[in-house]
Image 1 (spheres, rainbow, N blue to C red):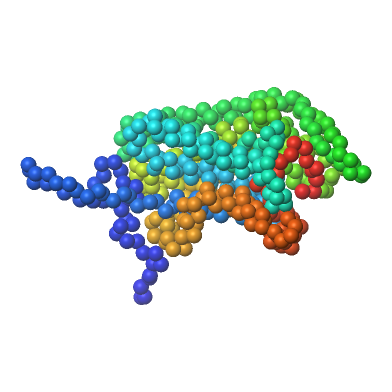
Image 2 (cartoon, helix red, strand yellow; image 1 turned 45 degrees about the horizontal axis):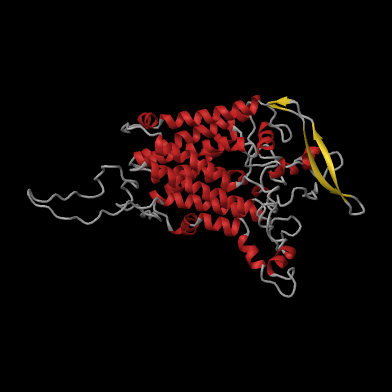
Length: 462
């Protein structure tokens, strides 16, 4: 019989644990000087970087770029209008998950908890400020070369702000809520980090309690409309609610909390539910009033549940730190991943929809479990079997994730190019591509954020 050649053979080095344990000497020999003598040893090499983290993060960045620029063409790459999920709805949980996975590696040995906390605060604030600048309406996008935003209408929340919140809370727990228990089994792993699980369960309970028990009263909003004579006017709309536990677009507790705390003028002005059947072009006359109302998909209450996704990522990071063998890691990865997917689908079957805009508990379970399964697949391919070459581009993207998000996913790269024009601002290469490309009729290229004005000329067909 012929021999079978493995395309990515496993070397002896790859069989060693990827993350060395504290006090572990299996990866290097300890050389002791003779009695009474001493000599300096060269610094031990650092453990190799876990490529799975960068490849996973790079894949999430790639998906985000595809969703932003091709989502209008390919329905599977566009967000679900409300209930249900598409590929696009996994991108945010993937980012939150990998943030959680990275933290135990960053804070594996914390000598000064105060200093580590200060660094976490600074990093979170940087992300929040960058998120407000990118998604608050300051940049007006590829259809408008002006910039600037009225602070009365600025959007305070967004993608980077949600990641910052998840990172900060998870980092604090990783720095302060860790016991001295020695981990030699999955049960001891749970015991060592039991305080973190208490926080995660408490956040989930708080979210579910507010989502299903807060009373949502009737509420009003205003929108600018233009009549046949192109004369603008302000139209006041009232949304009838008076309910508890409603998970629809109009009367959920997530939107109510954002309207009360942030103010309706600071929410995202083109919510995804405008593509639901109730608000679609099929029924523009009979569309309910809430179809024109703002709603923030990265709202305050939904961000509480999003933080839990970071905690699930923390658990995967703890497995990397405390378990040495590949088989041990994979086994401890796959059990919670499959369990989360199964439990989320079970919840959806019994009435809790998979919903990204309000980040339902079932949605958090399914997307976190899916992130875990994807992490396992990448771990097997890249770090176990050593197939690095096919994923080099994704690895590079993962190592430069924030830069790519700012330049490409937020369209700043295209906006910068658009600044160079011939004779008139409209005569530039970006405008030409947008107007003559295959996405012209579906509006696939989007602005960094559409909430530029307090009142917008909304069209129910977009």
